[in-house]
Amino acid sequence: MKNEAGPAYAAAIEFLSSLRIFGAKFGLETTQRLAAAVGNPQAQLRFIHVAGTNGKGSVCAMLEGIYRAAGLRVGLFTSPHLVSFRERIQVNRRLIPAAEVVRLVGELRAVQTQNDVTLFEFTTVLALKFFAEQQCDLVIWETGLGGRLDATNIVTPLASVITNIALDHQQWLGDTLAKIAAEKAGIIKPGVPVITATDAPEALRVIETVAEKNGSSLTRVGEKSISNLSLPVPLWGDHQKINAALALATVAGLQKKIPVSAEQIHAGLAAVDWAGRLQRLRQPDGRQFLLDGAHNIAAMETLRATLEKQYPGAKQVFIFGALQDKNWPGLCRLLAPLAAKIFTVPVASERTADPRELTAAFRAANPALPVVTCGNLAAALIACEKEPFVIITGSLYLVGEALEQFGWSSAGGERGLNEWRAPALPPQG
Image (cartoon, rainbow, N blue to C red):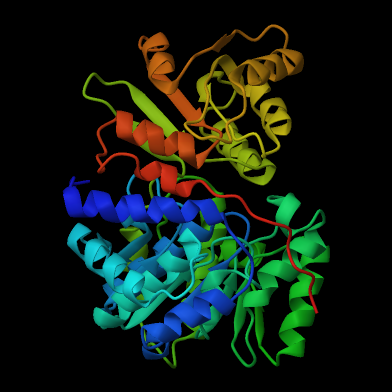
């Protein structure tokens, strides 16, 4: 990743960082007002809106790859970024240029009439303006948090995609699958088709009810879809098969509006790449690393299932760090039986869990397990430098820090833009 930093770009990032003081808030009014101030660029664009607990980024990457292979100019909006803010906004998998970030930040600041716009609201409108200027044929549009009152929900898409529903962000989205599903299903628009891989019955009932209320057709992707999947999926892990089936069902449902040939689908899916999710890296000295941002129970269960299938009976070396507001005790209990040794580290975030508490949790789950508490990721990498294979997991923030350690560059300080705090969710109805 090329470092395009300069003083103007650094100033733009500093301004974006200043918006973090407003945290994150739920509601569409501010985003709608800011978008209107720049001409409502979303009205010029077509979208596929993607929500869900896990797998959103992978599904977005697959959809982007397929439609780009079909010759479309495709915008991609995702979050959080791993290293550089520019990862969030891409056209044909090229990161938004630093100079464009500078220009667009300046233009949006000039029309910003409120002083409490959040970073995500500002970034959402910046992305819309850039995609419209780039004359994108289609935008793959990932929600930030939830869906119903997420800033991305000011668009009316061609299709609403919901990957799955699991427990995560309960303090903001609700403490049951049904409550979380209601927030994710908030992206469903009247008459717009819905495609989902959700299999939890209580969550699926909510999605079915919302789809029916909106007169939206509903396509379910399940085990039969996986068994019929014959195309190559280069992303590692069996869970990517359901993600691929979901992407393919979406493409099939939109064939009348956006035709894509079987050859284009095959080519797009075969070339898909998505960093930080079961990502394998080989260092020049031959050492191998597996990076996975598993940060909730469902994601960690997926990592565990993948490791048990790929390395049956083997114990692995892990570097683990997590955010304090995640269910890190549960993550530790899942990971402990798989480990030969674990190095616990703080995540480079003000929300980090204390690595000493992580160490205690691992030892409680497996008293015989060697666990080493490290002051930071760099120290952990040095401590395990003789290990031929190391897995780094527990947080996408930690994965982003690892990628920087392994040579991904940025202007510096951009990972801090992922920090946010959210208030209580307004009631539904």
